[in-house]
Image 1 (cartoon, rainbow, N blue to C red):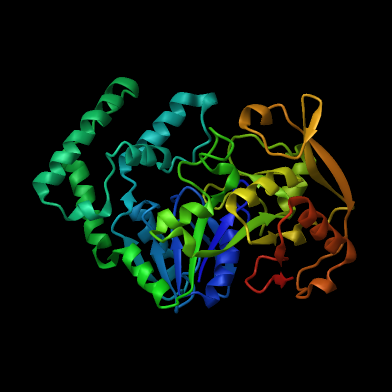
Image 2 (cartoon, one colour):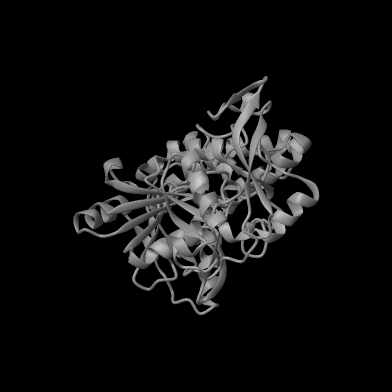
Length: 425
């Protein structure tokens, strides 16, 4: 069976932990989109890890981890990540890389940084990992696919020359930076070729055969519904689709093979970077929630940036679950709210004097104010509880209130960072 694990909100919902947990019964885990611009934090018997490109199932020796064709592949970061987990005692994972994946080039990272600096106060809050320039090139058809590493030198150099004709104009005229040479890019590609050669695979065929053999496959997405370029808070979005439906494309599977979609959402809201965030809170109230949240606080796994935080947003989450096609909802970090006497929940948006429960476009979001309903807290530590009925009554009421508001079944409740900190309903 094929299961997708995706985010409901702005990312950082706890997908890494859920994927790591589900991977115990999986044969194959596929990263199907995004790049090293976001991370999945995982805590297990080997320690605490922030993964950026590797799928979150690499800690099991029975799994095969795949970098799908939809991923923005930063080759050096991938291999540095493999080395970093091996240094912590994790057995060398079985890795396959799609021959149709495209590679993040050093000039993508350069252009990302230069453009953010040029935009200054109007920037998009990029992690400067080269993601937007990478996807721009992919869709302009001037990116480099892994399979192209094996072309004749003359053909590869000719393509590099065509690409640099564009890049160097921008470097020279817009950014006033030194130009890039053909030799420089060719040498980088040859280094990538040597690094990737043992891992390259026709992933679509591999997965097709795995499905026919009855293997369990996990598709792991990055970020969440609000960051999808089509359905999110455009333009403050990422550059590849964050939806489960794209998992079929980014892995090379028929869409009808995705039988289960686990949509992950936190018991409160958080976001990294710019963009509309209706239920956001500020000041000391935000700092307290941030410091109590996550595993050691709400700070970006890739950047270390303090995450913006807010109360649970039922409007955004209902929409996020719907466009993901959630069959199951994993409700994470419930334990973080144990310090609160009362817990506000955003149940609607007030826009131009009218209340709506439908998630609007960004232009309307800019005017939206949260409509809050306040629920009683439980004022106790709930870590270590394994049965739903053993949770404090107010904790159960909170979960059930959210479930009713979003209209999708919460089948898992996470009450701690560890693999074992999970309650099934």
